[in-house]
Length: 400
Picture 1 (cartoon, rainbow, N blue to C red):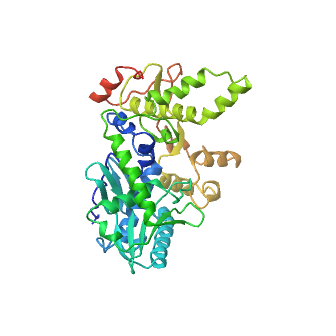
Picture 2: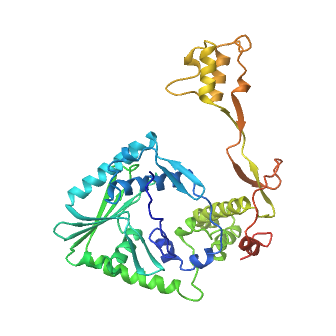
Picture 3: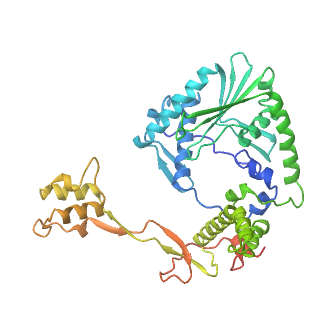
């Protein structure tokens, strides 16, 4: 029986977006009517790995003591799903092992899995992957799992600082701080060297950052919260519409890279401009996918790739024809293009062997991609347009 895990709660001011909110209080209001893109494969895989650790560490799910117990479970997010398979097990085991070592090293006696803590109920707060208190009650541990390839540092990590403040203020967890002398932030990231990164701070760090959190909430609560451009814009869903962000591009257009002084000025804002362009393309793709019509742009099918219709059936047919298995397998079945090339190199007469590769291979596109309207390929028309999107776009990109 599949375990029922409470759905993840998200507030407008959360831990993973706090650095962005501190930089730009206006992003939340600017984004609230925008459609969200679907989670990609990497995000789905990361969420699944988080869920496996939650099952294994929590006492609420006694049937799942180790990651091996979770094999075959299916993680669902909307209409998408991702099964936990053998290929995922190595990563899950590393995370599980290192997390348990950390809990032992810090002598953690009280352990909370995915506690939801808030500083302003219904507005500001978030979930902590694991929150622990040592046996002597002097060490408080906040742990976060990361599955990305870019190493995340726990040092002055604003996500964890924000959540530590929420623990301080939430009536359900505030008592944990009673005798605490040291707060430990832990990032558990299997792709990073050493897997576990730690940062230790004292209570005064949390007290000082609490002032930052309260000031940020005050900015967000203004009738017209201010917009500010900066490094966090690259992750903002409203980046492609933001007039402040667009100013970077306008500034760049006025510079002459052939002039040495202008070249330096261009270099100073290059990353900002590139991030804005990428965010704009991402916004275009999301909205075209939802059926919007945007002047100058369209979606087309990606180049089709040749794949096996059924690997098992193809392998059986080749074996029946006494084709050397080395021509179509290694440890696993070769891809259709690889096997085709191997057959050609071996000068096999497939007609004589009564093998028609086209019976076993299909050309299939892996999805759609964004291109200018001048591209020769036929546009792909997707689903209907949500009402709020029609109002937002008016048939074209909104003006700043």
